[in-house]
Figure 1: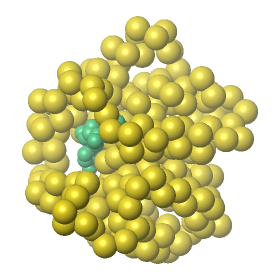
Figure 2: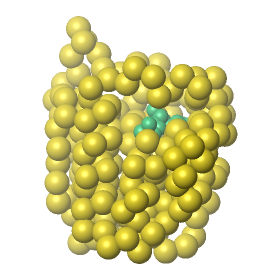
Figure 3: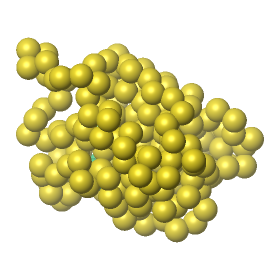
Length: 202
Ligand SMILES: C[S@@+](CC[C@H](N)C(=O)[O-])C[C@H]1O[C@@H](n2cnc3c(N)ncnc32)[C@H](O)[C@@H]1O
């Protein structure tokens, strides 16, 4: 981790009010794919846990298709925006609260775990620990959209900021899912540095 959790939380608290403005095409496509994969096959009774939920881009978008959505994040400012959006839209089956990748503060049953554009804040060994913790909740499916490296990063066109971001290669993430007892069932490349991985209980 390049910054402490408190530093990340404070940074996101500061930008929470503007976070939803001017998102990149890659981010928007990643959200679309995470939602599509997370909701595929849901009957409407399932629980979705969205880790590092931020202002609720994924949590609110999957709420219609799920029975219950639990959003967890370290930034109260980001979650205040998520709660305001849920109120405005009349979404009643979503709750937001403090929780971390490696300590999600959730011990109920969960069918699908999602996370979008956040796990790259962790160092690779921390991502492995996070994936082990998520697997320990025993979801059927894990959908991870994130900054991840499909090839060598292009120094002329960096998609991420090395001072705050620490993206893994797709290979590192794939190995972590396999070691945790999950098999990759879809790999979507949105950009050389952005993708969506779908892992299902092996
Ligand atoms: C770039 S935002 C993404 C938010 C949302 N998932 C989205 O798709 O818009 C990253 C979020 O990750 C959260 N975050 C960073 N490190 C975290 C950690 N270790 N555990 C939980 N949340 C974390 C931040 O507070 C922030 O809300």
